[in-house]
Image (tube, rainbow, N blue to C red; front, side):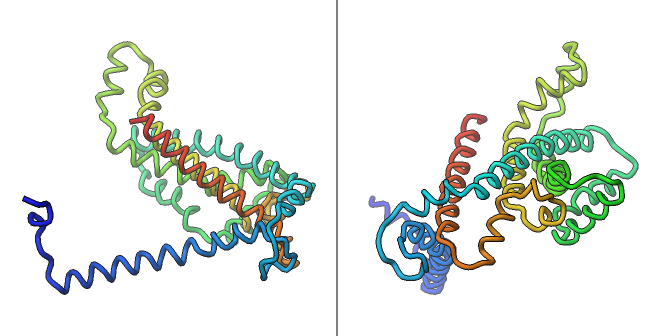
Length: 270
């Protein structure tokens, strides 16, 4: 019997709805990705105005890598993102485990307070952190930027790890303790490997948020701690610059590579 004969026939109304949803999905993807494709294509345009196509060139990529302030800002962003990601993973993983393993009197209030930085307006967080650093006399620089990024990054790690802990068998830790492991050793050798997918997902999220952050960084940076988003924002205010197209194209390629890498890590952890 042919496969088509075994499929149930849809009413005409459902068929129409099905085609409408397909078309709507296609329009959404077009709306999302066509501007990105245009940006990448025009990063190879020789025109300075970046509106009309003239000819193919790699000049803007060469000028991008020869731009000292942009390269320095990119290095600063990588340093800050790496530091904030490491701290966010440590704080988020430890906090998620403590909230899962032990019961506190105000555990629900703690959960709410942890979630607030995830939804708080960035300008509010930036101003409040600036006031805090000024009050305690902490000089603005790399340290303050990393602290600020950790403030809004570690809750994402904590939430991801908590979701993983909900499906974790508590007998695993009990078995490790029965076999003579200390609570710290049981956590490191038994619990952490089980949490690896969530930790990796949280780390990627924290790194991405840190690399992309503009508003909070604007308030708590110093002249020596200028990040890439700050530098790009300054260039964009002047006008259209084809180097920004080249920079954006590089970031798009890096983002796709990160997604593929995360999918590879997921397969390894299964």
